[in-house]
Length: 207
Ligand code: PRP
Image (cartoon, rainbow, N blue to C red; front, top):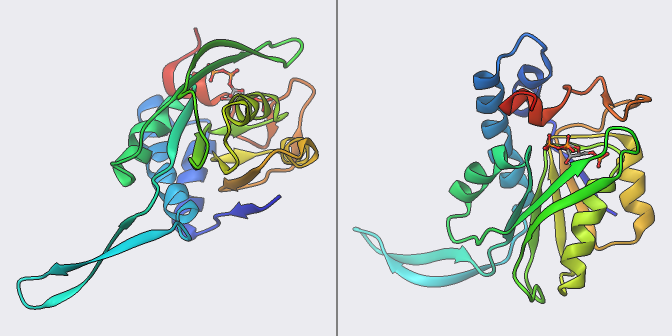
């Protein structure tokens, strides 16, 4: 399984803002938006394009557009903060939604919403979630996608734990991971260390 760590200095700076406990919700969301753009940009580097002849005001040349824009799937709540920015970069992309809450005791994901196209054959999918911790939420989401025929899934996560990466690798699911950092470990509560806390709470407040 491929893991692409986007360690560009601009990405590191946004991630540092998100990690800093002093960063308020508004600035956390702003940094997440900007970092999402960078991760999507890198994730699409090898995306196939179609070409057509276009006219500039001066001459004719080749123009390009995406051959097959990905379906964007934010995992609620925390992935919502990545959705609009991803769609800004890929305006033709459709969007599906998966709502999962992780049980604080068992760390198991519990679904409360699934809104996805019935068929995902020949459809690349980008799952958007700031955190890959145990990997349970991402694995659950990818299984929803592969049940619908998806064979080309990219997990866009601002931050990942080695445990979550290994979970996905062991699952054998057709996924690659694009992240700004693979951190040190998970703690006993299932939080990424050093991490950034709870990405949902930091964006939207604890509910
Ligand atoms: C967080 C995070 C991921 C999940 C990661 O969501 O946004 O979805 O936990 O953990 P895992 O890899 O161990 O499954 P949470 O359940 O806190 O919900 P929220 O997005 O509504 O805050």
